[in-house]
Amino acid sequence: DRHVPTLLAGTALNGVKTAMVAAGGAHTVVVTGNGELWAWGNNRNGQLGTTGFDLVKLAPARVGAEDVFGGSPVRMASCGEKHTLIVTKEGSLWSFGEGGDGALGLNDIVNRRVPTQVKAHHFGHAKIVSAAAGSHHSAAATEHGGLYTWGKATREDASPAGLGHDDLLTKLVPTCVVPRLLRGLRVGRCHRLPHLDALAFA
Image 1 (cartoon, rainbow, N blue to C red):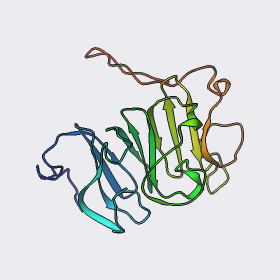
Image 2 (cartoon, rainbow, N blue to C red):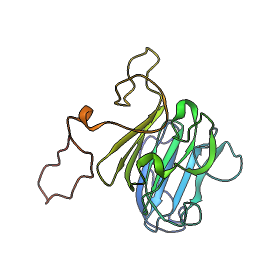
Image 3 (cartoon, helix red, strand yellow):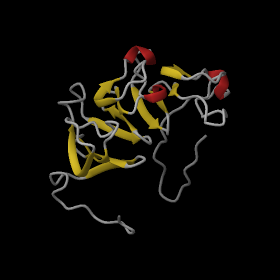
Image 4 (cartoon, helix red, strand yellow):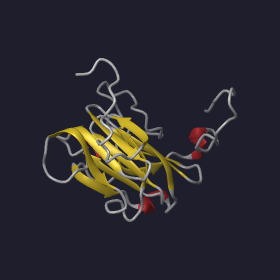
């Protein structure tokens, strides 16, 4: 265990700078400046996306870039408790890890140990610009401001888990949150603001 931030060795990611990092329940992933994905930590459910059947990786292991994600480098990553979502620069969405309750968006409840593309037709073939992985559910936003959620709809006490639909049904594939439930709002990226300005969003 580490009780203070500890710098990884410069060689850990082949010397490439980190662009973003995401932490899950017991795993961590990094997107590098050249669009590679690296991962380490718990891999019991395949949430690292690495080849092989190692249950844990103690050091960063390369998952891939264009060679794994359909010819496109990685733009961003998000970690759930036991699953991982990847958005590529071309706007496709990939998932891997625990598939229980449909959190991977692959129309089943099967775990995936390697990155698997979520079918584009679920998003009306729109490009994905952002994704977020929750404990047992996931969400993604498209270039047109559409919000899609999927996975487990209720908590253990039967209260809503945050899918945002008019029902409490588990969704095995990405399902659009209808605009009227968002009071007509669309979802989008935050834009860079000048220094000293506040960042606000709804």
